Image 1: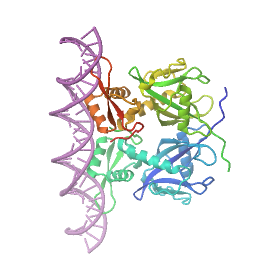
Image 2 (image 1 turned 180 degrees about the horizontal axis):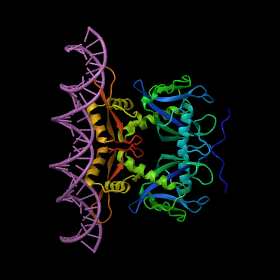
Image 3 (image 1 turned 90 degrees about the horizontal axis):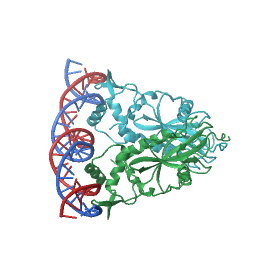
Image 4 (image 1 turned 180 degrees about the vertical axis):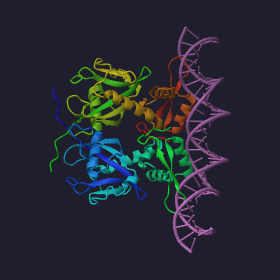
Length: 220
Length: 220
DNA sequence: TTGACATAGTGTAGAAAACACACTAAGTTG
DNA sequence: CAACTTAGTGTGTTTTCTACACTATGTCAA
């Protein structure tokens, strides 16, 4: 028995999060084509014939934004039949984390075609991309509480204050400094570098690094 | 610009869990066709042109097993390019929960074509369905700890001992009776029916029911 | 040099939650 | 009515969570 003909167009999209100006922002690209030509949307594109889903997410992200080497995981698959006005398109949504330290002008070219939009003040987005961003934010916030995913938004070396600020911004609430540090220490997954971060007219901060840079573990 | 031609065959699969003989079991169906003809596999099938993903999961489950009205949620999308030996097939995996009280012979017809297999002793499965079952089991166990999903395996009325046993089986470890009951009571999501469950030569057990039968909430 | 400034860094006590643990209650059955 | 079987209950201990405020150490400017 032959296989039925292909039934759907398959795409991936990625919500890239970082912190900018003390806000959680997501990376948007301007759609060059109909439908929604000129409207902001998530980076992404069609899955190649012989390409894994995560591979596609990585590739389209690199092609459209130059970003690579980010922490990335699958989020959810959106397949409402009328989410694309032309034809059926199913998208496997992912989210990725870019440490703000890597933001240094990485995306300053083509400023009309890309932007970082605060997740709590998004412009109109194409398709159902606003729902995707909302779900990704929610997932990220949850995972902060029961995993070590938060470290994936840190650079190679970071201070505890930095880390705390990132958590506060994503969760949308202030955290107690001493309790936060106690909790982080109890994870035993970072170590002192021995160096100090100096900035401004105040006491320097210890720099830490992850013991296992790529690892994201469940806690408790 | 025209949309590119369809790039992938899209399917859904469902892992239906229930408890049988004090084990967590998943529902398997025998594949009628190549590839893997005659091999056990998860119920599922191709997504219709104008059909939602969850709708497809519900439909194929009903068509292949007669089951309906189950709690069901999306699990993960498996899209490895060579997971199907013929052509690219991407499957959106779901899992569903069938209260054991509804097992009464529901699937006793066509016994050669369907079976309940213990998740820790699966037969060889088609495609990557063993990975799907493993991930579903892991997800279910996690969600037991931070949500009220466990009640979706209960019938309309149930005893606390029943509920505890289901938790123990899924988690694979014994739970303390008094602590378990304390925890369940603190959720405030069940109420006494006033009736008693009588079975065997021993004290009857109180019957409870969910205050909001469909609801699954996050806790803590 | 020294004082003002700004952020880094630290401990403790009370509350709440998690955990370990064993006996009595109330039916059925022979 | 005695034996059996599962239902149902409380307390003390440990651990985790929470609230809370001051000292340390650098820079910078006067």
